[in-house]
Length: 278
Image 1 (cartoon, rainbow, N blue to C red):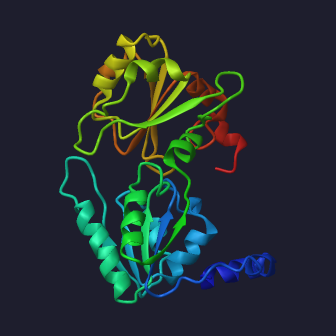
Image 2: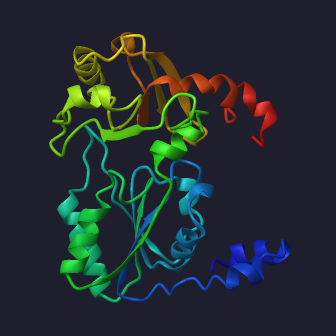
């Protein structure tokens, strides 16, 4: 367990209870795929913090906060492995090979990903390669930006007054083109649609949803840099979304009535902040 975390818990009287949790050993020659959550460093799990303090080599994504990395093992080698659209990025095959290579050297390897490793994070592909390489690995779930990011904007993904279903999708495929989804079915399948990596093709996606019969007055909100000091939220309608320009990324797009709850629930940046802990 991290020394600073131990000290904090001792002062607050929680150390004995957490010590009893018996965190698993981060064994040499193994790889942990850990979800860092969105933005705020406090959104990583305690097991994720445990791994951060034990790791000897850390491969971190572009969406991992610098404010989180300062809590890493100071002796760890940190390797940037982020992929951002339209910018030079490490190739996925190279990242996977490096994970395998460092683990075979007997290092404790941490693959630190924004959000959750198994939600549009290619964690399944990396874990599959580790399995085929006969290496030990552990998956540590994280808070997906499609949940936690919207929560920081005061947008509940579900609310019993508006929706009992939600669709999560990615706006582009592995080539960078708009996702080849059954858009007519998606348009009618749920009141709320949450879209990852959709800003680049937002105009095309909007037209596909409208052509499939989605209400032009349906609410649309875009949460950029979620759960960080740079967070911004743009609210509009589905029909007017094509007029938006220069939307900051990374961003989560949500279509549906739930963004209306921001008037009361925007605890992070809005009026409700006065009734929250800030």
